[in-house]
Length: 260
Figure 1 (cartoon, rainbow, N blue to C red):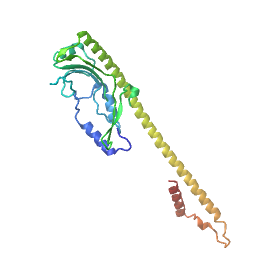
Figure 2: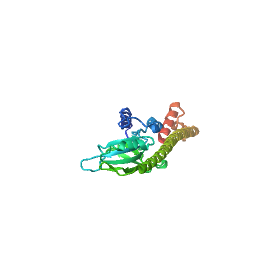
Figure 3: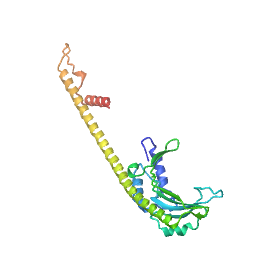
Figure 4: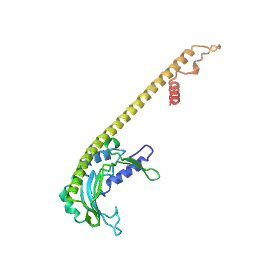
């Protein structure tokens, strides 16, 4: 997200590099459920998103020589970005060799109002050259399925987990749609307010110019009246303010400068 104190050229370069780069997600493409949201955000001059996942149901197998659960190097036994099917999961978890974990992960993409209550803003680097708005949610699910390659749950319980995860996926998509609508409202409102401020400034500028013109005219009329007076020597005092066109412009310029 670009803010007023940031270098616009740096932000534009970061955005260009990001959007031109390869999608490094496992799927390699943007999920259909958030294509419109991603395109809308990336079309805005002050935003771009690095997210491509709308949410997923996965089973990962954490295997290590020490028996400890690890995040890096885990084996993905099953993954879907849609609702899951019990038969597909059962067919894949027979290959578990360690600590298999069943997970539902919601979209990680202004967001509390949309249901994403664990969101926040991160400043990137010492110079804060990058500001990331992380849209997260506690609407997740994580349950161990096996230990040392041995299944710990029954098929009925696994069916219950699939049912819970699918319900969460449905709610997740509802939140994504709500989030998309809120983002569009925020952007449109911000743009409308910007237009109003611009028009207000333009109107104020015209008002100041009119007032300055009136002030200049009043001063010139006053000078004209004074030119009819004498200082006792018979000489008029009209030389204080000349009615010469150049003098009029000079007077206006001075008044304009003073007001500015």
